[in-house]
Image 1 (spheres, one colour):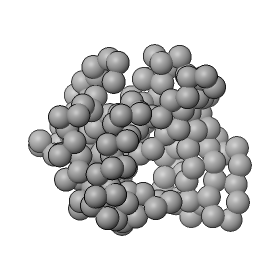
Image 2 (tube, helix red, strand yellow; image 1 turned 180 degrees about the vertical axis):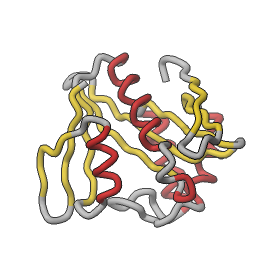
Image 3 (tube, rainbow, N blue to C red; image 1 turned 135 degrees about the horizontal axis):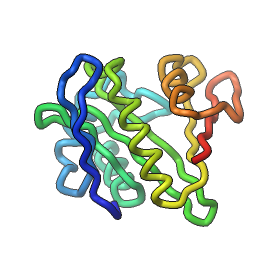
Amino acid sequence: MGSCISIHLKDKRDDPLEIRSCSEGDLSRLLEMYATFSPKPASQGLPPQDPEACRRWVQKLLKEGENLLAWKGGRVIGHVSLLPDYKKKDGEFLIFVDRAHRNRGVGRALTYVALKRAAELCLKTIWLTVESYNFRAIHLYKKCAFQTCGQDECERKMVCTI
């Protein structure tokens, strides 16, 4: 990641939370979160169920993307990856929050920090795909200024203009 991000805040339960840039040194902690992630796969086959496939997937995200982690008490509880396409000035957005920490503002905080980072990278739009029945995630994305730009019976594509 080009710049080092470290933001301290509180979740909806007033518990301390830190959002910071992810580095290669965070790989084992990130894999710990995905090892117990539920449901698996959560969305569109991600995160991969097989531990080795999951490791390769995370390593690829760390190599190709801009990654942020949400930390609580020395544990990774959330992960965002922006996969930029600098030629198109856009990027794909992926987010995963540990089940025990959902509905506490972690996803929204990670999303806002990721959108700020996308602006710093001079990206014009961020897009994602989400399963059509994942109403909780869709609600979060709408709160963060994503709009639906395509949909079928299985998933919808959403985009946020930076």
